[in-house]
Every structure is written in C-alpha cells, then in structure tokens.
Amino acid sequence: MEKPELVEVIMSREMLDKLYEEKLARDPVGGVIAGQMQMTRANFLSAKAMLTLAGLETVKKTVAQVIYDFNYMLGRQRAEELGNPQDFDSYINEYVVKLMDAIPPVPPIEILERTENRCVWGCRRCQYRDAIIKWRDLYPDFVDDDVVEVLKSRCSHDHGWTIGFNPKIRYERVKFLLDGDDGCFFDCRLP
Image (cartoon, rainbow, N blue to C red; front, side, top):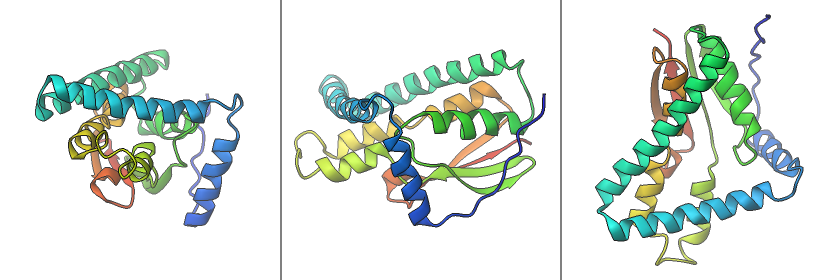
C-alpha cells in the first residue's frame, strides 16, 4: 500500500478561516454544528454540576483522566486495525490529516514543521474558547474561572489518542488557546 504524500502548504490566516467556514458549510445534515454548540453548552453545565460535588482539582483530574483514557482506547483500536504501525507517517496521516478533518467543528489543521520524525501541528480556533468569549458575559454564573479550568482539563484527547496509537511518540502541547496563546499546537516526535 502506498503511503500518502504529505504536502506542505503555506496559507494566510484569511485562507485558513475561509477553509474553516467552508468546512462548517459542508455539514450535510445541518445539525452537526448546532449539535456541537449544544454539546459545548452541556460541557459547561456538567462542569458546573461536577464542581458542586467535588473540589476543582478532583474534578480536573477526573475529567482529564476519563477523556484521556477514552481517546487512548480509540487510538489503540485504530492502531490495531492498521496492524500496529510504528512509523511516524501513519500517525500523522491517521490523526492529524484524516481524523481531525472528519470532525466538523475542528478548524483546519496547520502543520508548522514536519520532518521524518517530528511534526509540530495545531489549530488557531476552538469551540470552547469561542464559547467562553461569547458566553462569559452572558452567563457569568455558569462560565466562571473554575468552569474554564475544568474545560481546559478536557483537552487531554489529543495526547490520549496519540499515545494509544503509538506509545513511542513523545507528545507535548506547546501552545494552548485556553491559556491565551494564539493557537493550540503540539510537538510530536518519534525518537
């Protein structure tokens, strides 16, 4: 089987935003994006509810672990379906290229650096960040600093899937939108 060739494309911020808007418009049922906003709202509310039952650190740790474990399982399953590939291109193709593009609200992925054993990739928009900006003033009782901290802990999915797919990959988040950075970017390496 031929490996797909990764092609580096340099695009302007405007072009990436246009691609994202086009991706949202391809929503074939017209409800996926609205459903994502409902899911985002449900995540805000469930974070608020969990915080009434346990302290912030316990909730953050629990949420991060559950999200990580579930995505680790998904990455492991995909690796097994593919015969447990150990090469770096398989990971990049399956997760960064195919899976991220298949999820409607995920903005276009940018690959900032790519070598045989390293990839720095990420995106510059996030449904949580967009919702926090939109809803913080509208619903201050439900979108407070603790809820935002719980939402941050939900962002362990990329790490879980990566390590599930190939535990040899070294994964590091180098930028995080919810910390005020200009994007969520990840430095992944295969030693």
